[in-house]
Image (cartoon, rainbow, N blue to C red):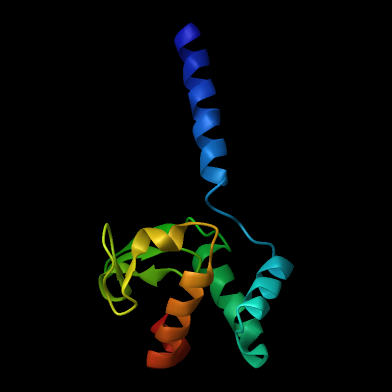
Length: 122
């Protein structure tokens, strides 16, 4: 019984620590953040829809697909736009940077992806 209790306490601590580094946005909160990050107002609804369908507005989302791992709020494709453990890819970023609650770097890369091919890149 003590082992189960210790495990539960450790699990709660780890989950609480992880919450400090990731965020699940509300629709309004995401809209405000995208406005703050200078996304074009005429496309905000499209970006919110994309984020809702790709990541569920969760900055820590990682998805394994046939074409590679997709990371973060915008589900950025790791084998093209970023690399793990060191800066790289077309965005010259570490993929891990797209998994925290600071979405400014995610936004820069998402805008670059959009400039490269529009929403069809998702």
